[in-house]
Length: 291
Image (cartoon, rainbow, N blue to C red):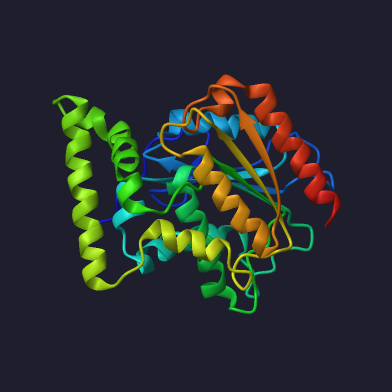
């Protein structure tokens, strides 16, 4: 039986992981320079009460835009088979692009918001799902991709400690023992999963997502990217993120970067809300002006 959707006030469940919030009924139609649809790919094990703070922020900026939120667990991001990962994003594609051709309407303007590596992995899965549904000659149309605390290093051995901590933070509430034991269990799981992937010859989900999002045949160059990060992020190293962005520049994607002072992983908005939302708004306006 399918998993029952979690309670998410203000949103309608499309699946147990995908939720929809329509724009304000009393808001005027979206001006031509504002998004019509915003898709938030939440961080690993992000709960509705926390992710909703981001949807509220977007609603303040763009009250007439509909907002889709994708909730995912770190276990799903690291262990879910590739085809299942892509299939789980099909409801997003069918909601935003219901037409047979996948073009939607000529007025559709989309902002993507990926949070942490889990959000980045399922953003990539949605981009691939679009091509699976509407043809490899088409690419997921979007104006701006906001990367909040993602991507980080793809070197497993040097990053497994950070990843196991991230998974422990998201799941510690489910276990009665000390945090360090939970992290140790995830550390062991990640090494076992890595070994299994090596035996199978399968590509790690993080490496797959990075490859997809830097493939100009899959992820359109006709968009802009914004990277939000800090030196204090305990999960994503700032130098690792900047190395990833250097690769993005080499490929040819247009981007901007914004560093925050003192904020933890996916905590930039909480500590610096004005800087956070002003940067997103400004970057959206710049990206939209070129469309």
